[in-house]
Image (cartoon, rainbow, N blue to C red; front, side, top):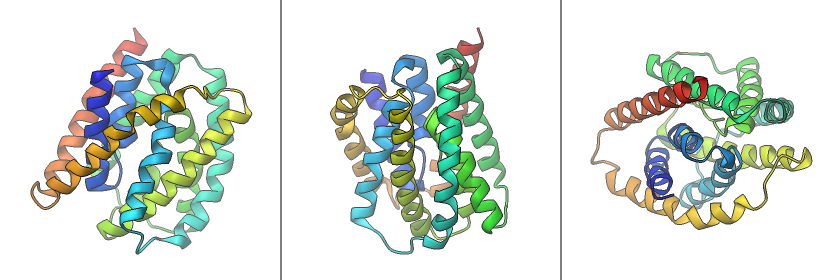
Length: 233
């Protein structure tokens, strides 16, 4: 549990700095250590963490983009619930590992995708599937927003994570695949998120943004690779 708590501190600090990272950093480690907690634990934390961001800053939110991406997350959530109901923990481990590696590759390559109705709907639907099944729902929308101002990325993703996690939790609850007992553990681990957010404020302006991004991608890639090996073997 100490390793998981430390991972959440790092994941929260990364998300506080670059706008996403909670699921990318913590999901592979959680899947390796406590697969029975996935995706419930990180979805509860993804519901709690954006509130701190939005209390601190709520300017420049791209409501138009959210208006197209969030409704598309509803059918994506249903598809994600179906994945959780169908696949074993090892199979979900492969999905989580592959999703993280794909996200790392796309983010590292800085793929430029036009932001329009079609791409926003596609991002919303895709993140509904991956967010519900693996708790990693940020990359599809983050890739679209990567050239916006840092504040708009942080605040828009915060709203998206908050509402998206709520949708995913509701979908899992209705389908009978949500362990309500995990919410107590999520509340117990909430101080880790607060510590990570405090660490992000200390590091902001001290550590170059590109170095934080490079370190995050490296950690994510290594942990996802380890998860893939363990799940496949």
